[in-house]
Each structure stands twice: as structure tokens, then as C-alpha cells.
Length: 588
Image (cartoon, rainbow, N blue to C red; front, top):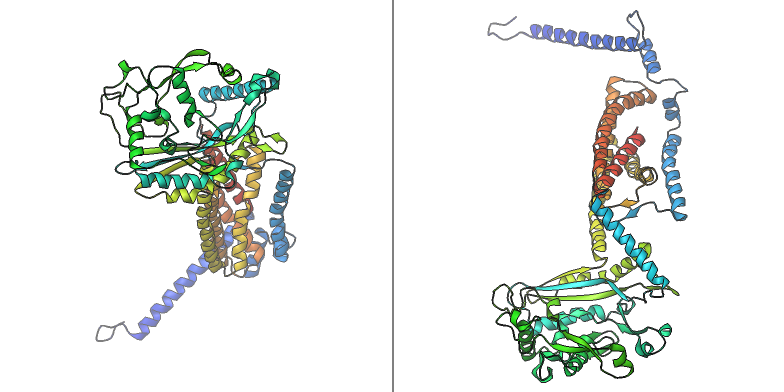
């Protein structure tokens, strides 16, 4: 009804409110009736009647694990015991893992390398066969007494490239700064423990072949462009010391060749950076000497005159000499010619490819865009009274030790030498250590993510204990996952991609926790007044279905990577799939 002004009267408003309240009450009773029917259907009751509230609660509790002797009832009475029991499983697995490792078993082999070769490919198999053949051949050499000397092989090294952004590198200041950097590495107190060693047979070559004995003569001279700026390093580069006929083979030219430091080894062959005598410095970075060296090598042609470009200096190159019998020359001081030889363009080993003569019709270049240095690291190293092997775990150990030594100069190499010069380098083992350093910094983000999610969980649960328990449970999944990965699937390799599993399982695990928490909170509305055992049973039943679907689909997606031909991909997929499965089992 309305009053004279057309407004609804207070009485009419009261009637409408009562009507709406009555409709809400009917809907609530209808909902309650439907729920009781659902419970009755689950109990397979044929006749359904209205249940009292007490009957409804009793039957609901009974149908959802409310038995006083049931699993959830026991959990309700002894929550700490169940919690400790769950974590003790991870502790036992971790303990077993530690025991296996203590007996020498390799659990996982962490590596920053990403193997991308194609497994089962005939080319890879052929390459492996060649390597095995080389190992067998090496073993045969050992049988005949031709085994390696300590640190005789220069298998490992530090290679440094100096690249000029604009202009040339034949600048005295640039060369001086290069010298400082290289001397810092070579003059390090540990360098002599890693350098490749030079040996000589000395006078023993003149006696009984069974009495041959190698004598160590110190660290091998490293390859560097700076050596060429020592006037005594290559005597033919100077008019005063290149002989009467540099291009005509003669014994006189042989003497010039042998007196050049380039042809020598051991003491007296260093232009600078001699670890045995730090006072040695015969380099000459004067403008005139730099110009002489650059001009000589830019015109040097290692071929016959008819095959050289027009700008080649065929009156001084290629430098030729007579080869003689080495044993007769050392033992009897007798020169017995055995042939002629010419010197290669040794400068090409330390300068950029655009320097010097062009054999494609382009003009000669005297501009140096890049210098190259290589510092050699020797194998096999000595371990007590014996030498380490040059293969397998021994070789890996030596590579790791050399890498740790070279990595000490990472900052110096990154700082460079200035003067508009970019420094690039590649050292044995340095890349792995750098990757590990960067990986550690990346894992700082994991810590940040962990703390953020922990704070959010604490706010959601209003309990720091529950939040930290859930987060720790997620990370503990790595223990069973690693055991399955290693001993069931038989994988030792654990690479960078596998480590990304931390981020993946952190996201998936926390997502499962949120699903369970939301379901748990919903049971308070659906089952008001019900005890813990009833609510937890319903929460697990509902959330478990959702988590099983998402976890199984995710795990299968990762397992699909097992079909990949690349080891880095299929090991990553299998490990992450195992992580997801272990996480689902621990949560449910």
C-alpha cells in the first residue's frame, strides 16, 4: 500500500521484509534437506526421511572418517606424533643417502656443463670409439717405457685476446699494460705448481739408449706477442743479425735460427715473465723497435718468391737454413746436413688474421687489431710419489685445480687493461666456476622467493609454525627425488637445468598448499561444528582430487621430455617429474 504521496507505507515495508526472510528460511531448509539426502544416498539408504540435527551430525561424522579409532581421529589426538613421523621419513632417506656417499657411491655429479650431443647417434659413437682407441694406444706407450713426464703435456691453458675498438694495438702503453697483466698471472706464487714443464735429455742422448733420462728445465715459455719485441727473440727480424743471405739455406743461418730465443727452451729463452728469474725483461717497446717488428712480419712470406704477393719482402723471407743430425751435432759437435728448412710466419700465432700480407688481392695491413696470449698449464700433475692419470676422474681433478688457480685472476681479466682495449679470455675450468658463482647469485632469488611465500603463508594460516613446516616439506622433496633419480633411473649427471627444479617445485608445492588451505577453510562453512577429523577427511578428499589432476598432468608433461635425444633435456624432465610426484605424495 502507498500513502497519498505515492510512497510505500511502513506496514507494507514490514510485510515485504517478512516475506523475504521467509523465502531465505525456506531456501536454507531446502539446502539442508538436499545435503541430508546426499549423505543418505552415500550410505545406500533406500528410504529417506527427515533426520534430526543429531542424527545428521552422527551420520555425517561416521561417513567421513569420524571413527574414534580411525586414522584421522588418531591424527587429531596426536598431531605432533604424526608430524614427526612424516618428517622422519625424509630424515631416514637423507641418512641412507649419506651412508651411500660415505662408502664412495656417487649420488649426483653436479655440473655446469649442458651436454647437448645426440645420444645413440653414429657420429657420437664413432667419436667415443676414437677416444677409447687413443686411451688404449696410450696404455701401450706406457708398456714400452714411453710414459709422460710430470706436467709435460700442455692440454690446459689460459688464452687471452686483446681487441682494439679503433686504431691499432702497436702502442707502447698498450704493450706495457699487457705485460703487467701477464706478469701478474705468471709471477703468482702458485703458477710454478701448475705450469707446463720443459725437459731435456741433455748428454744422456749420447749414451746407452736404455739410460735416457729427462731433466726438468723449468716452466715452458708462454705464447705472447710481447716476446717478439725482444730483439733476441727472432734475430732474422733485424738487418744486423739476419745473415748475409736470409733466404738461402746455410749452416750460418742455422746458427742464427738456433741462437734466436724462439727456437730455445728453458733458462735464457724468456723475453720477459720468467717465473724462475723475475728480473728478466728484454722487451723493447720503443717506437722504432715496434715499427721494425711490425714492418718485418707484415712483409714476411713463408712461400717461394713466385707464390708470394707483390708486397712481400722476398729478399728476407722466408728465412731458410740447413737441418742437421741432432745427435751428431750435440754429441760430436759435427754438422751433418739432412735437408733444408724454412721458417714459418710465427707472428701469425699471436696477431689477428687481418694483419700482414693478403693472398686474396687486398693490400698489406700493418694495423694490429688483436693480440693473442696463451699461458700453458701442464698435466699430469704429481700426487705424492706417483703421477695422476691423464683421463677419467684424475684428469677432472687436475682440471678443477687448474680452474681454481686461474679463477683467482677473473677480476683482473674483467678489469682489463684500459686504453680502449677489450680483453677476452678462455681458461680451463674458469667457465664452470663462473657459472657456479652466477648460479649461487641466482639462488639468492630463491631465498627471496622462499621468504616472500613464507610470509604470505604465515598471514594466511596465522601460524608461523605451520607455514615453515609446509615450506620445509616442499624442499625436503629433493631427497626422495634425488634417490629415485640416481638409483632407479641410474642418472648421475645433475646440471644447471636440474637445479631449476628448485623454482619449479617451490611454485607447484606452494600452489598445492594454497589449494588445500582453501578447501580446509571451506569445510568450516560446509560442516559447521564438526570435529577436526571430519573436516580434514573432507578437505583431503576434495583437495586431493584437484592436486592429483594437476600433479599428474604436470608430471606427465615433464616425463614427455624423456623422449628427447639431448641428455640435458631428458634428465631435466625426469628429475622435475619425480619432484612433482614426491611433492604430491608428501602433501597428500
